[in-house]
Image 1: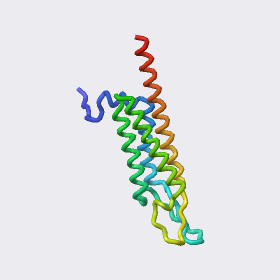
Image 2: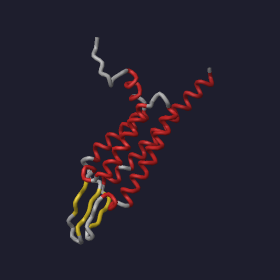
Image 3: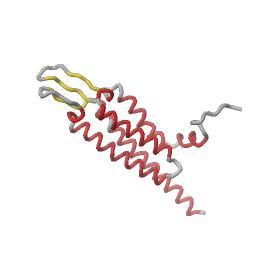
Image 4: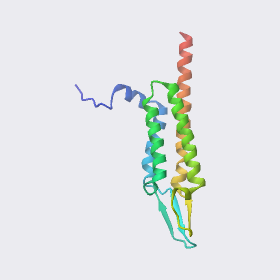
Length: 156
């Protein structure tokens, strides 16, 4: 008899094989990457000296990204109720759009800068667009599964 961990039930293994679960899991992978990739860069005065900030240096951005990961995990857990899963993905999509737009358009809102400092989005801020894509694709494939189940029910 093989050992079976609490988290590795057959239902969990089945739901991870669905493509939308992979997109939602990628949101978590992206979060880990953004912990090490610079999200914002700021310069002091007119010098060429630039400092990079990751999510660990920006508590508001860290909280926003962590919220997106929690929403993605919650959507994965709700795999038995596809309509709720679509709603959760849409909420995650809206929050990801808001968070990404704020990070790219108003980067100085995430830091406390001196008057002679300017902030600009770095490569990590542009990578947060992948959260939007992942939530959109997850919702698309969940909707596709829902339509497939409904069409199979009509045939019975």
